[in-house]
Image 1: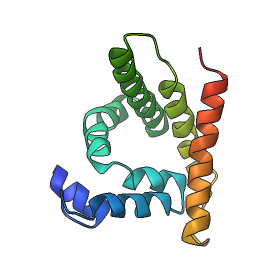
Image 2: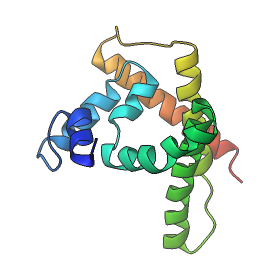
Image 3: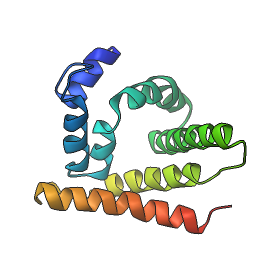
Image 4: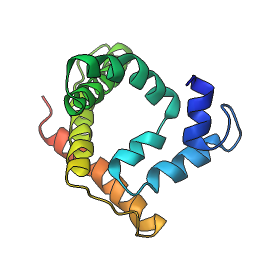
Amino acid sequence: MNLSQYIKKRNGVPLGASNSLRNMMIRSLGAGKFSNFWKYWNPIWSYYLGKYIFKPLKIIFPPALSLLITFAFCGFLHDLVIMIIRWGFAFLLTPWFLLMGLCVIIGDYAKIDYSKFTWTIRAFINILIISSCLFIAYQVQI
């Protein structure tokens, strides 16, 4: 599957469509599982992370560990951009993404599914998970 096909599958509209961002927000925030949030969030970035990081790691490691490493790598790239822009050390997003990766793994393992709730409640739960992980990462920040 190429990037254009991937984006159409995730967003329901072609790459560059005017309602692509709206679809991404509605689908990701309204996901009934935290792992599904990540299926819809930023499909361009997730396409490349999946193709060049997660899939090669799965050859060597179990899928859960591969996912965790992929989340940590993504967070590190975000931290790296901040360090380049600020010309100073930053290490908040790596642990944040690592925690969110753990939530994906735990949620799937425990079969946590809130898809029967309204979109508003599902969005609240997804935002709560994301913000809780950020709060914890901030508290343990180096």
